[in-house]
Length: 515
Image (cartoon, rainbow, N blue to C red):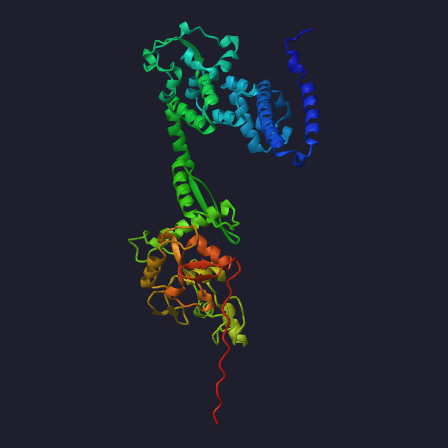
């Protein structure tokens, strides 16, 4: 008895059992024992098989959804059912369900080509994500276009040959002078070689293909990047208003959250394509070429580049031109902490202690109470403490303003802002070094900092041009964190990581006793 069900379809479970047996045998082989050439061929053939099986699975998912039996499980949506039934994450299941629906309803020829192995998985993904994204675009995919038989080529023969009989249309039914829904950049693919006539005036012998089949033809000839461009062009011309709606929707979604969390800030948000391109270009320019021994992840480099971008804007003084005080990074440091910060280890000034310690001469209960009540180094908004490593890096090249408070927080005196490296010294260093002196880096002075090269500032290094080197913010941080020694030999030379050591502390000269 034949109930209309394809016998081959009913044998799907048997075929899957056979595949599982073959997979068991294949996966029992040790990949490390295979010659490289064999492994390369095996990898390429495995990807092709997985792409075909993936397309077949999407076809099955589309069938499951359309039949509706999954609703008996009382799931919130078909994507939730797929996530539960097949152990997928919900975001992945949603993407797969969307692809299955679009292939079933809008791109049937694409699904057939993928199942037959004529279309790879990434190509399917490009067409699915780009083409059937509005009613007008779906109409353009299904619309029939006159196609020259001599120019069709092998890229369209397979997709046309596999169309259902119900979709075969006599070319006489199509008005060859009707305006095409295809982008003008794709119209050339409808002409015979050498034909220069306009689409509506071309008299070459023509057959009929759909917009989807034209895109499949391009998929057979274009690489993935060009196929993506052609698909976006098709979508834009078929429904330009959809792009405008999408852009307005993206503008409405655009946001940036910057919230303080334990140990730092959490950043999250969404940018429009335009703003994302601008930010990505700026970050790429700031990241530059990392050193060969750099172990930072790309995400860490982008985070550092974003901070560098903000630093460059603040250092340039381009913001707040109408303000009495332009915005800049400010750290509040009690004098005893600032004085101890610049003291070499073992030579803390009398009556002071290194930040974060209770050492020194102040051992009385009153001194201890005063020490504990001191806010210590903080940011301008009162949060802190500021890590010593950050303080050392900021203090090495900054403006310092002395503010003296009275017992009731009354401001008694405000000193002039003095730069650790004066403007004249910075100009001299820039004139000598020109760019970041790290090997292979040519970052300009605008995103560079003056580094106490041979003896660090925190170790008592002099603020002089012979102890100053120009380093971009990225390599300045790398040199400091990796403790890399720098020496001048007609140019700056770098030691290995860990080669920098603080100079020895000179022994105090004993005073001669007098009679």
